[in-house]
Length: 224
Image (cartoon, rainbow, N blue to C red):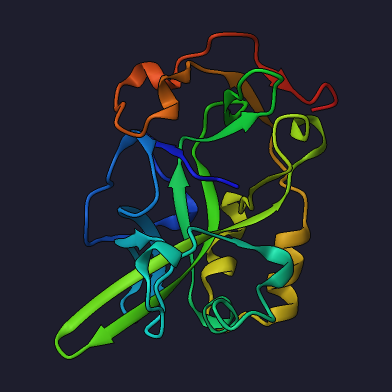
């Protein structure tokens, strides 16, 4: 489960241009759920960089603490919580990295999953809108898939990643659901790795860049 992200200062891929920036990117070396997060989505005016609350809150949800920040790809098309949003309200969450925790005998070891060339990752997500009287709130959830082979010792699941060349296709509300499913099942075509980081990241109150610094060797796929 992806419950923490590194959102740094980076240039988005050219495939997302032109982009209407409604909100500047909300950066954090240790971004936790239950707060606004920067997304890219397609609206009437085209591609938009916007903000959504990280934790999906459909109009019928009674308890905010039950708002899921992740959705399993395997159940997207059946669960009422997700099936409407995945059909027409897909978005991307651009990040520098994803924190995961490797199980160990005494305590879990945090790792940071990044692009091997330190490029931004475009994480697959979906969004929904809660409207009540004059109040409107948009919220989102990441979509997770089984972890890639060389990282499955660290975590059993990771957010689905969309390659830059496929970003506009993912955001197209007219895309058939069979193609959406195929995109989520397709292996990410670019090199991904991970390195251990300080346990400072365990506390979301720590907002220091030290959270992102390596404390050990980089793990990558030897075949990439």
